[in-house]
Image 1: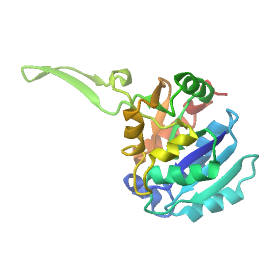
Image 2: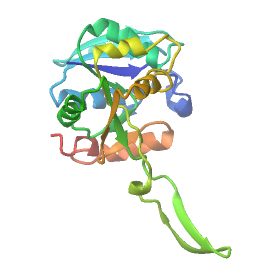
Image 3: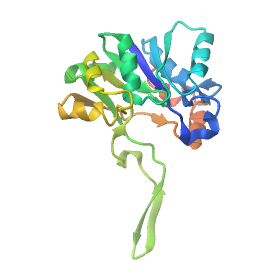
Image 4: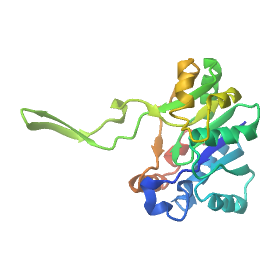
Length: 235
């Protein structure tokens, strides 16, 4: 099975790091977050990758050529204006009639891919999405009559479930993507939902996106742990 990694966005919310490189090439502990993500996937036996590049795709292509590893990697320039649905469609045209793992190139999680795959097969749907709880970012306060009675950190378990990426897609999903300019999240996914063809695998372990400089710095601190939390339970 191949893994498709969406790595073509502009990364405008972390522009301090993405002026001269795409967001998946932002470094965490001396290596691009893209490397950490691919290593996470390869550690679990999937070593065949298609990278959906766009913004500054040449930076990713050059980096891939410099790698010394046993991974098979194809960097596909899917266009600067192409949205996530279009990028997935372009890559699935390359992967043929096989099931694929798809994820975003700017987040890490200790997702057990075998468990995800077994869940997907049991569900019998065309697609499975990984549901995660967002990291707790803000303090929560309770007040009575204008006086604060409690203030503390928000419990992550109190948050709802959101899209954490790490999709399993059957080849038929290509037909649910209508155009290159369509986001996967607002195009194909609602169509799949409408036909009861999207299952949700709930992941309660570590998940951390890298949308802001603060989150990049958080990942840098996490990387100092042995193992880092995105490999906890994986290696």
